Amino acid sequence: MPHPRYTTSVRKHTFGAAILVAAAAAVPILAQRVQVDLLSEEEIQARLESGRVGQSKRPGVLRELFVKSGCAPAEQRVDRNRGNVICTLPGETPSTIVVGGHTDFVTRGEGIVDDWSGSSLLPSLYFALKSRPRRHTFVFVGFTAEEEGLAGSREYVWRLKKDQWSSIRAFVNLECLGLTTVKVWVRRSAPELVTRLREIAQSIGIIVDGVNIDRVGDDDTHSFLDASIPVISIHSITEETLPILHTPRDRIDAIHPAEYYKTYRLLACYLAYLDSKIPDGGHR
Image 1 (cartoon, rainbow, N blue to C red):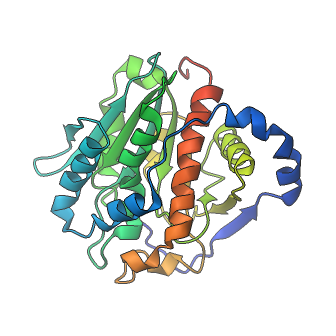
Image 2 (cartoon, rainbow, N blue to C red; image 1 turned 60 degrees about the vertical axis):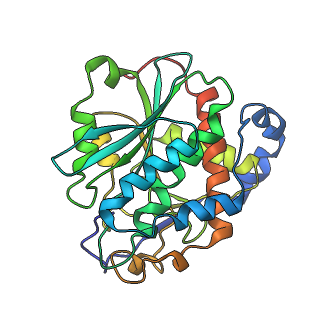
């Protein structure tokens, strides 16, 4: 997450408890829509640990995790030395949900928080969804060069053909997870996607806070927003945890394993819920 200004406060908006109570009756209905196969907490932690390698090796580790999860990933070259890692889970329709994180990092730290915490979950989310038919096609992308002007995601969007662009129903960005409880950048995100996240979180007993980071940084949702594609940015940043990013404090021990696994569980259920809730077809 490029964020040149550290002095700006992080604005918070918390979803109210009254909504949690009101949503309780919907639990049985939602449970039917979120059938997923979760990996163990130990496996998710091991995959997070696997990112403790040099920057040039990260895409290779991500490819190995996709293969381990049952997907043969493709590479989309961005320049001579770097590329996006892409895994596609075909659905019953061409209507598409793209899920992304970035593999590059600022080398003053290990880059585990920003953003191996997001990109290393992509193969695990593929695994969670693959065993059951899905209406939407899911495309999981480990973007390169996010820290250098969002180059990987901009290249991905630029290369979309018209029919591919029109078929994308949502882009879900995973950025800096596991520092705290799950957060969503509300002002950056499409209201419908935020509502669906809130609904499924409440149904499985997870509280999601809205923390806006408009004046703090940017992420790969920007590239998709520029193409008029609905987005949601999911993170775990607060005013207290922001100074971890882009510093030697960005290490594996900055992440809370229980919160990280809870995030994985929520994201898997959220994607399955989106699959059942978002209509087929594309945006215009």
